[in-house]
Length: 351
Ligand code: NAD
Ligand code: DAU
Image (cartoon, rainbow, N blue to C red; front, side, top):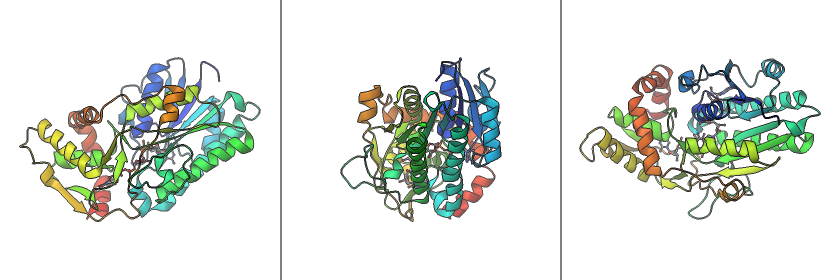
């Protein structure tokens, strides 16, 4: 790949994508960064106001399933690489509407792969396709063990099944056509600009508004939480240093049951909002469990550490406080994304 790269980052207006776009725009002024995003309910250009005028940043609104649009974009920019994050990302929505997940996550990924295959033909060794995926493809763990890069795929939700399928297609394009493809599978992210349908931002918003905090089942499910900027840094490292065809697991070494996490969040929110201790915890409400709810995820990120020297940087308590601060300081952002369609989604999902 050339040193002055042109990179298409898909899903750059979403939660993780916006952190990746910001990092690449700021750290690599010699690169041209094209943010390709459909701006679904989860895509928000307000996530990128700080870099939107940067000379090395371009936004293109479009759908990764639109063959003509994607082909034309490859012709227009002749990109050296794609970092692919665009996806339908919420498990609960995938249970309600699986087909949308097949379209974006499977068909959209194959549409991008195909455009890259044609555009880069004869020069696969100088062009890279980096697919950002999830630890959910590995299924669920019991009390012991961790996911490694060789754990067999065993997805349970329509979301994880669609991501698993997209991973298989990426590997197939590497094996069949010789394209330079890399994949990473990451655990749960948290931090700023996270859409409040996911556990942490939803709970922050509800606590702020003194609304019930819906905890699925008994709150015993375990997730391995990673600061989103650490994920963006891992993506940067993998994009620049990984050997072709490699897969890396990315995780926080930071396992929490949902109920313990919520209690910690309640403690932080009581302090930040000057409320009496226990005020927020009184909002905890156990609700019907998610169908097919995976019990535990835990990532073994040893390969990433040993090969590329990556380690998470933030302790969870510190990261969670920073996250709460961001949401309390960005009330307008939060109000904008929780008005309109969000209210209908919330009612269908929780009432
Ligand atoms: P998100 O839902 O916040 O953002 C997804 C983005 O993709 C949005 O900007 C949306 O507008 C865009 N998009 C959706 N459909 C599109 C389409 N058809 N064409 C173009 N753009 C489209 O998601 P996120 O949480 O930031 O996740 C980003 C990626 O990282 C996903 O691939 C997800 O599977 C993966 N991932 C997420 C996590 C996590 O904890 N959030 C963990 C591991 C992996
Ligand atoms: O593991 C990586 C995955 O993490 C990503 O691939 C997904 O895109 C991302 O959404 C996330 O999936 P989860 O399903 O783990 O995240 P979510 O925030 O939806 O839920 C976290 C845990 O909290 C999970 O055990 C379900 C539970 N939960 C969630 C919600 C929204 C609740 O108890 N109540 C809720 O209201």
